[in-house]
Image (cartoon, rainbow, N blue to C red):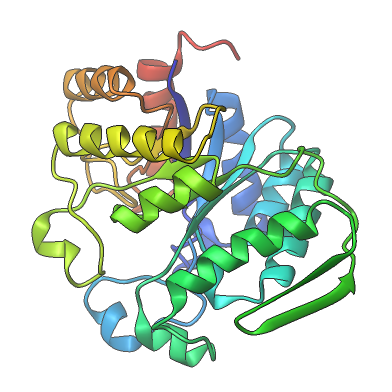
Length: 308
């Protein structure tokens, strides 16, 4: 059965009273859990360039601040970063934040992580852009080493550890699942060899070039990617099943109107048939009231048969 993660609209920082306050996040998180969703997700952009914002980009609250509020307001809802850009960060600082959130939430974190694509944002944060894929791979390895709770000696781009140790360990063992974001062959390979899942997203061919990834324009495109994921995992000797988390067509962040119910039901069935295990959906966010109404309606239509 598909599991559902829904957008916590912390990118809607204006007006912040609707979505960005502690009270708003607490109310929304409790409504999401009551509605029967399995997780909520947050995006991030710590310091985006003005030219990207002018073309429709967005700000966002810090993901760990937002999800810590969700953790305190809920009991079972999973806390999903969608996606965290690891190449912006020192990997041990990222590991500490994730382990801390997993500890205080009782083991509810899911790490959707990506390589990032905004060169100007990398520059503003003092992070190299051209080698971000290599640093992403090294960050995953470094975090996994830190999460063992044992002394770590390793070095990579921008970090060096010599018998350093991190506690507390995450509650989830061996660590919170890492779902690798991105559509490219390298993202699929990274998911198959280093992650616990793959998190692709729908993207037309016209948009794939500017963000340096591959298009996914149909269920067939996604099925081909899932097949490649399985082949890569088999070659890597992976035995455990890998999750696939996908943003359904027509349900991206801050969608203005919802697709027809029958269209979504058919799409959810098709996604499950090809091996998708999670879907991450967006809802209308023109106001908190509309968002909560859409949340309740989606729950009644698509989640009413799920055990709460």
